[in-house]
Image (cartoon, rainbow, N blue to C red):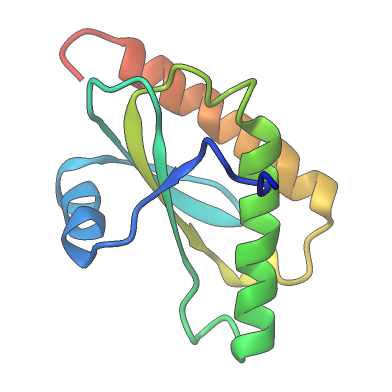
Length: 122
């Protein structure tokens, strides 16, 4: 049976995260910070981080699940054909945020990433 993120590729290796942080562009949102690095590929790879400053394991895992679900929903819209690696770092404001607010914030951020990745020389 197919899982919720079948086509979504994830970043797992520390060096992949480091590369995106060091060479990628930073996009701020009230609920998270996204880093994007164009790769020239077709499918985006996404990594999610939530630090201990946000809360305990239950809170951190809830934040990751929420981000994953929003990314899954955006997969066929904003992420389609976006050839880049992305790392999304949760901020403390995410804990109390409404799911709809998070979804809108990520959609706006992905639009900014698409605009930036699509420009020549970026």
